[in-house]
Length: 542
Image (cartoon, rainbow, N blue to C red):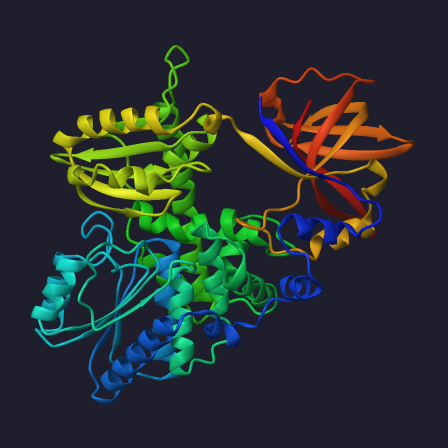
């Protein structure tokens, strides 16, 4: 049973959007105006510190110097959607705006190179360019690469790091470090390209995709990039993204943060999880419809394979009903696919509402992926066992590590012991935060429009959730391909309402005509036959 936290009662004297923004700590007329119409991204660098601006200028000068001397420049990316999008922005700038021929990229292979700037990748690049001194620009990685940067400098390379991950105690000795942990790597790449003079109006869409897929809060600077990035995606999208939506089979009338997180993101991530992420980069770098469609279809097929592997591994990792549920889920197996463990950890964390660690072992080593829940900082927990890892990094909600197989059992015992000491039983009760208890008569098109003014939704600006009590049930049916979604027709105060509870069949509700129910829901626009209706997307009911 989920705990319902009702934040506020509806005040009929105030507009619904005003009440919702007040709950989010936005109350003055100036704050409301800036939230509804966030600052244009062209003005975004004013939001950063003087240190950030200074290092941005250093990076810009190093790049201009390299271009002037016709030095080979390598964009060193990452194999997830953020790293791919960031690489695409900078590569497109040099290749198609600056017409700079001596530009290349390197996307590490998860299985051969591991995460981030690696020694074997540096050696590979040095050999490829016959020992020539390179300018290496990392995106979405590099902030922990102390030894790797030292090696790069020893080999004669210049290194610019752009990253948003947690800073280590000892910083790498790079020539410039453009770092901020409030945005994603792609946003930093966009800011760098903008400082260099980029005029590519489509590239902001990549920052929007990366912000959502990397689970960043959609407030402040991030809200600007997501809002204006979505405008580009819905009016003039990059050809690769347009084709990826088309081949997905989804009927998308408007791209929202949902499509970024659940349609585009998983497909961009699929290649890096199963094979080599360069396929996703090639899609984003595509210049023609035909070229983009080829890559989009390949990615769509890989995503189907990824979905099947995720289900298989998830079912294996689930805790037996006969076992006592620990405060942290821990699962390790040699048959786990290294590229899928993060998705399995996320599903376990969601199902059991507790941090989850999934490790893929191969020979003497293991690769781990971790997902957490609200109020439990998983990277801090992992740092207490830092001596057991070969490498570890991440965020409060998600992390990854490499570990010797001999240390896995000790890690498990230490993490379970730490969880028992620091995680309370209350932390593990799933909650629904309900913005407003709403009278049924306030469920109307006028209020829906006001709620839509708060878009884009995401972490930090979640879609508003409402509670209405004592609907009377008129009819319950099950819909969808496998008849797993509950369609509920209801009545209150003489008006009719329709709600859908996705996967509601799993909750084993026994609802009958005439029953009274309290419903927690979000509002959704339903345009049908020239008319607009307000539907309820049910999150829970009692």
